[in-house]
Image (cartoon, rainbow, N blue to C red; front, side, top):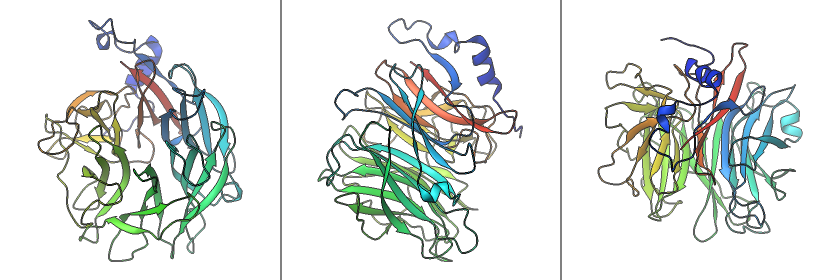
Length: 387
């Protein structure tokens, strides 16, 4: 497999100054595509982007975050767009004594509270990450939460929701607010020893400050299976959907979706869900990310695409999946469409097209932020848009 740095598709788009004209041909009512651009210079991992909807005067503004290491310590870089994703500017940083001390920062998420939680008003921004991966053999990783009430300009750590009981990892936090205003947090837990290499667990809180103990949500019987990378979205039907991967020697980081009436009740933790396959037979694998588009259709982004024979597909790094099934139940038909930011030949690595993020902007664009290695070896974040 070729392992390139910056994608030739991405480079071609940058050189031309526009995405392929074929994307817009015959669609004068649609916005013009926007060629990929750097979100920020320097390292940018685990990109996340949201369109604000619950802060007076800031509606439709886009906020993006990446985990960065441009210096001796990790921090969360917060960037803002006020023009529908045409441009982004830095507006804030997330850090504290743990990140500043070089304990290790990973796997962050960005979330806007749609309603008040405890003393936090609607529109409060939450940023959560894994902390402590770089503290040695006796590490005790934790999941931490920071909050901002000034549209991402300043941040305060408000909670440490869980601290690992051993050197196993805590990874990839994710938030949603249940209908009764209980905040739900999911993350990946490697601390269960030989029984489970990794599992997805959840915690809940009424104030975002104090949290219940973690309980398993997806915990498969095969001890080598590694369910992880959860993203949870509310569908237009009112049900909830969780996209996740299952890695390990038998599962190969295939992608799955599970639905539920309540985001705190996902059924038996040992259940197996059907593997996601596109209509052309290809499979999205590694870092699945779920997005509900404005028309209710559902988008699934993933790091890689494989053929059914196990070989990497031609669509690898160039495509996302979409289904018109708003419920994600029954026969779900997933169709390939071009990715807003094509990354050529991504492989199983922490950087190329790892955990891409998507949002529909107020200008009608589908915006994607993803990462790609540059010629100097730095993993940089890129953004671009399609109609």
